Length: 294
Image 1 (spheres, one colour):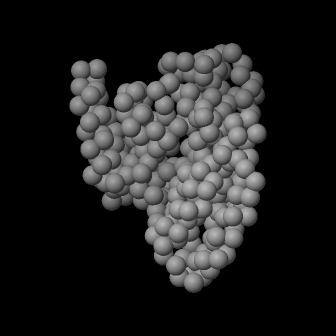
Image 2: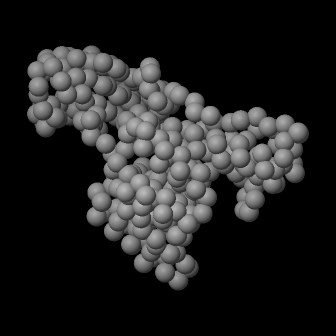
């Protein structure tokens, strides 16, 4: 029995859910999970449906047959085979906590992705990556060679057929052109002190100001630095008794967790762009995305 997912975005109107449910039922499909959101402010409707094809209909047949219904409601839609793992390129600089966390979750099957390459502007994590039998690419970036470096990065993305780029603490600013080309397909992670504490050593700045909450934000990358549509956030409390090193350690933990949850939501097509923000449907019960690994 094949499991599929259908994602739909369209103007809000009466009868969308019923029409989709009837179409799937008429084609021998059984809905196993469904989420929808009607945005009253924008007039947009978002829906994600998981279903099984009990009569063995293939994805192209289901997709072709859905065209008439989609035209009637003005839908942007995509059918997905849930057994196919999304191809992902991870980019990292010299902070390896997020990379190592993602490699571990990938290795144990908690993050069902296909890591097709790791790109870095340094050699620090070459051995770690190669030991996982993943191709490693060191692409140095300077002010002088930035266009050429980004062209090399995009060549890796093209050659591997990657659907998603994950910036696992990659400390280079991407060009507007690259952000636009990969719109909705680059995920970043950073601490949530912005814009209060910028630049070097933000955790030390937070300690000196007596911050009581440390957080992390994962978002899609846009031309506006660190201001793309937010996918996932979390916080952890700290006290006056903790040191700057504690702040750094706790901050790394929450960054790794938030990034993993954002990726999990994206690869399962639970994230919908909605202007400058996102609609993120909850994971089904028992999903990894609801777990909290300490």
